[in-house]
Length: 260
Length: 336
Image (cartoon, rainbow over all chains, first blue to last red; front, top):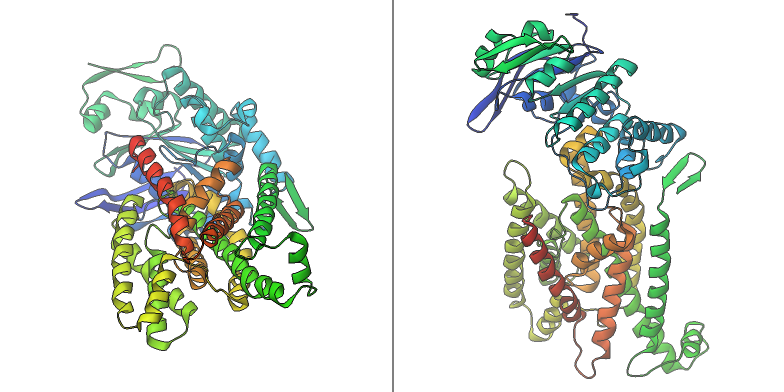
């Protein structure tokens, strides 16, 4: 892995009252790749992603974005380069999809300069990419779960950042919608070269969509690498305590976990 | 809709414009009605004559010395309350978190009263200090791994009750004439306001309004959650501090002029947000609703003969049922 990844964590430690979640974790998020973070419940996946996006206050160590400590940087400047879609975001009642997506432009705007041609282009492009153009004038709460998630993704896309972090973007979606969303993210990554890092619960989806997998256990990186090196019977046993058989997916050729 | 002026471009919703126009018309009608109403009713032509210095001395005195300053004070104080209410409710993402519910009104009133007892004057500085100290104390007491609205509201209600009791205690140090006047003021009243009050509240509003309009942009982002706001590049702590200070300053101004009028800040935001729609903070509409509610309450108070009822009685009559309704709705939705 290159030494020049734009986003990285060094000796990262985070604790909550009564427990240490991340224990001196060091990690680089490979540029322009799709990275997926996996691990058992409470291993610190979300905390790691939130720390990488400066949403989480950290105890020790540093998160570095473009050579500077992200927690000390100007938040607005960070927001032009890195966007995160947290788990279960909330919006005020009545907010229209178009207005939500427009808010993604915030780091490029100011109270006096609230709209430019670039903003208009970015918003319609984000709506287009996520297939939400026809729903742009609907209030967010009238959408289905899958549509709502795409609307939030559109907001993050309108931010036009090189790095996009997604915290369990497929939660509460049924399988077809999960696949649809991940296909969309993959297409964005391939077409625009955006760096994507996301937390996923489903190991098989991780194996199918990731270029790089980070397996966390007890607040530390247990193993990382391409799917076929990480998704193995021994890693599954070591990380999740899961007895399983790993086969090669007959359609996509990525590793596929079949629990025993 | 986009408004452009050289390097400035503002997003303005058509609906907000229409709402403002309708509210302005309502305001104007109520204003005229209120000036004409009273022990000595005046027609519109007499009012205009009085303002234009062409009326009898009595009419002139009634309009220029009594009704107009009182009405303009009511409108200004109501607008300040409405503005402050919408700012706090949006920032804390809860309609119950308005300055009159969470003790900031009571704090400002206590501070003003303390200033009067100790120095005989300095109402505004007293209200400002009282309001800021209360805001700081309530925030600090409610803080536990962040600011949960529910905890803030409960602590605020507690602070409010304590400060009201404290104000009663302070009043025992006043002579009975002043004390009975202050008792009315503590309910919230616009009796015998003069042009000095008008200048104070409107001057204050003119100073604060640009800041409030500037804050509308980050406030509409803050209305989502903390994570999203940070992700969009807002610096949460400085922003919250600015909003709180601005909101408390507005409350202190309004309290200095009208006393701690209950429920004006509280009802204005939800009504304004409902009519403006789209999940917007609706600051301007809240200010206008606040002004309308206050003027309506004071006009009602004036229309009761003989006894000089404080306007606060009527804002409470309007606001308390709304509070109960909101509590019930939140309780049923499980968001309280």
